Image (cartoon, helix red, strand yellow):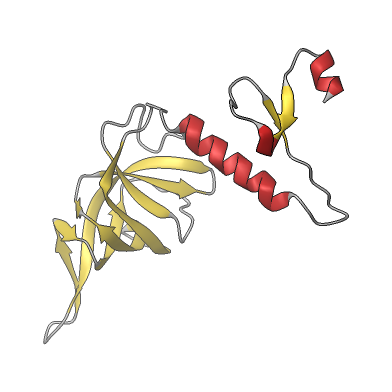
Length: 165
């Protein structure tokens, strides 16, 4: 703490701080004793949530979203995402944000396919899908999407499609 103070930084142990904008948080950790890592992760997540919530580069529609279950690269159709829509309605043409191996990316829903039941089993193209449904989403960019990632519908994204955030 005295070394930080000597450099002009106010510091304190993380659980004693009331104003994180003026004080550097110190989280005691020890790899040898295996202590402190949960506290460090909690601090990082909490501070990121608190101070990055006003990032205006990407506005999400929090009433619409899903989870990518499986990623397939198919000849002729490109990248397809087997997805569960858990909230709202997903429409062809919507912009979605996804986690890729290269970082977050924004792309457009090119089309959607759902399984049909009955006499004609197979896939059928649809324009929109409501929550609590499984759907195969065709995206417009060749992205290396991470399976298990959330799929968030974006409104008014700045930058270009598949731009990194």
